[in-house]
Image (tube, rainbow, N blue to C red; front, side, top):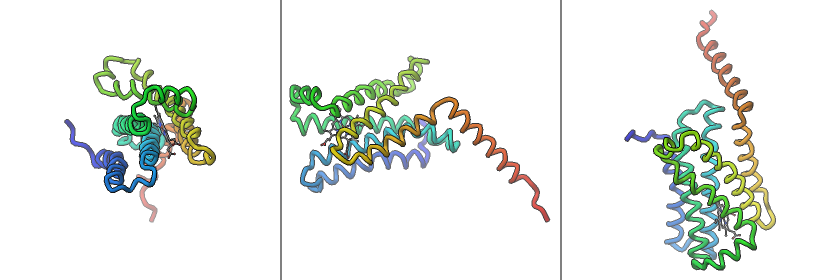
Length: 214
Ligand code: HEM
């Protein structure tokens, strides 16, 4: 096994910090007057942020040529799935007392629950097939399967919008970030960005190599 780079270590620490903070707050009775709701909010928000972060890895490489971003893409996606599962477990286990009928009723009545569940369902096969072995086994299908992460991201944004009763500014900001990341994925946009980056790098190199006047 290769030793993790400092950047990878930093990403793991950053991804685990909300979990440590949540457990710490729960153990010290510091999760507001409505601890289950607070834990649902926190895990949901973290899952969404990590999902968007994992989707930002490839565009970060495309735009800035920052290769280490590619090394943390899978870990970020898996952390996002982990927090989404925890989010669901808190909802199902603590909030609804494992009452399947009640959850099914909510699923039929509340659209935000329906899209949240759809997002979680889409993310599940991605997490399960995220290993190198599955990547090899599925060949070209793996890439196609993993494109499901985009509809999952869109569903999460709708989930967040519909969870909010009035002020939807924050979900709209997250939605715009996701939209921008999706646009950067489009082949013509990506080609244009890579072209600009390469030309800029060449120009910068020439400038550096030019002998100083005087
Ligand atoms: C079966 C799946 C899911 C269920 C049942 C569910 C349920 C919930 C519930 C009950 C809330 C709080 C609503 C409120 O009290 O007003 C919530 C909020 C939220 N959920 Fe989910 N959720 C699911 C999937 C997901 C997934 C997959 C993500 C992200 C990857 C996610 C992200 C969020 C976010 C960002 C919030 C808002 C947090 C905030 O307002 O700070 N949820 N969800």
